[in-house]
Amino acid sequence: MVSLPSRLSQRVEAVAGIDPELRPATKPQFGHFQSNVALRLAKQEGRPPREVAERIVRELDLADLCETPEVAGPGFINFRIRADVLAQTVNEQSADPGAGIARAEHPQTVVIDYSSPNVAKQMHVGHLRSTIIGDCFNRVLRALGHHVIAQNHLGDWGRQFGMLIEQVVDEHLDLATLDLAGAEALYRRANVHLNQDEAFAERARERVVKLQSGDEATRQAWRRLIEISLEGFNRTYERLNVLLTDADLDGESVYNEDLPGIADDLEARGIAQVDQGALVVFVDGIDAPAIIRNSAGGYGYDVTDLAAVRRRVDDFGANRIVYVTDARQWHHFHLVFEVARKAGYLPDDVRAEHVGFGMVLGPGGTPIKTRDGGTVTLESLLDEAEEHATPEIALAAIKYADLSNSLQKDYVFDAERMTQTTGDTGPYLQYAHSRCAGILREAEARGVAWDEVGLLAEPAEQELALWLTRFGETVQVVADELTPHKLCTYLFELATKFSTFYEQCPVLKSTDEVRASRLGLVAATKQVLATGLDLLGIVAPERM
Ligand code: ARG
Image (cartoon, rainbow, N blue to C red; front, side, top):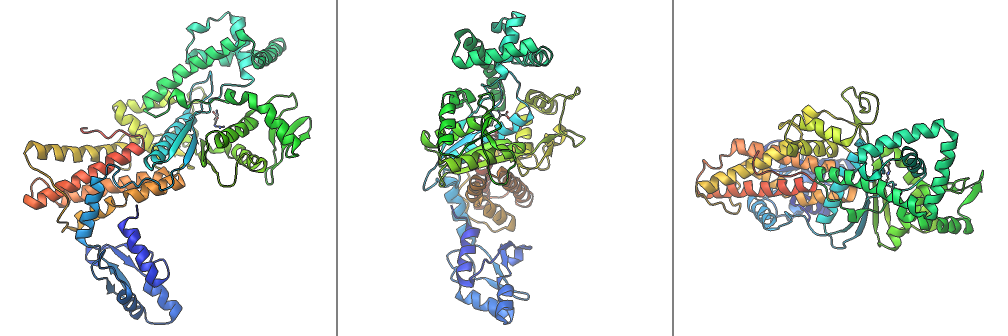
């Protein structure tokens, strides 16, 4: 949906010929927006700015949107949106169950590859970020009417299974009794064993061959390790309140059978070449090539992702593929996209994006680690946040902290700060929502009815109303650019404007139409906060 400010901007541009660069007015008496377009044009045309401004104002026909624009100072143009147009726009938005989010005219099929933890290892902070960010993309794109296919590209295949299963055999371990933490401990023991014992390493290699050739006992142990891991991952997903389910699982093993065919195809067409015994593809500007098949004849991460791209395009009909991982995987995805384009697996009209996110830092500003230097599990971060707040608030705090900075940036995990109900935090937005809910509850208890927004006489009311009408457009931008922090900023600003409105404009203490209209504005604010928080994956509580 095109917001009022955007409509205004387009109309002014049509007359002025250049972007009017509307800025919010600095004082209510200057209206809502100000433009210096005449000053810029005056320079080009060599005419007095006020004269240019007056000519633009004369040529503009904005009567359906604005009061008559005013020329101010050296040649600024001030615009004031008509209060009735503003009220009507808010009311239309409130009547829309989507709160002004317009469904896409041409819905796309969007594959989002996220979370993607590794079997027999607990999820760490990187997976936390991937899961939360991917979940937000999923919600935002769905809200716009796109067909979203979530893909949990589980690390469920590879050489590590050789040593894991041999270690199980060595220890006579009963896999029925193991849980994810136990599997991770097994992983560590197997790794140590592998590095110390060449005979064990050889058995592990043989075990990989057995796994690949479909040996039943081996496959059974492998399946059980996946099952154990999924039990753990699913508990975390539930705790995180995200949309992922088992139906979204397409782990690396899914592509196993496609890999030799891809290697043959790339080699036959001269896209891949043999280099030091390995089959590789070189890409301009990157030193290390994509490994299609290693010198031992094995297949790895790069080629598996090529197979995944091909399936997502050919079988799923993806128009857009989004990968959410640690920024350090930039190199890998850059390679995969380039090779997939060369090979024709990724046609030009399919958008492929790697959204690389920054690290989570500890209080010292260094990457967060456990006391003994290990990686921090996601569960332990949730536990830490829950020391400061209820689970619902702690989760809101973590998600908001994760989404409210530009994703590429590292951020400091400060459980105490992010659980505060003041400042730029998730709980602050939840609190604003619960305040709206409280006001409406109180009105109901007193038998006071609320109505559509009507009289918007006060600047603080107008500010709030104007901001409300920009919601749909904001969500659109977030979907295009994959920048959730812009939604966070929007909502934070909304909560702040609501606060100012509530300080300056009595709601329940006013009377009649004013009260009914202000309650309408509170209801509209509540709707946008609830919808926006939901897009971030954050619960909007009625009470706090
Ligand atoms: N399992 C990988 C990791 O933990 C992430 C996989 C990301 N997705 C992909 N298609 N490569 O780092």
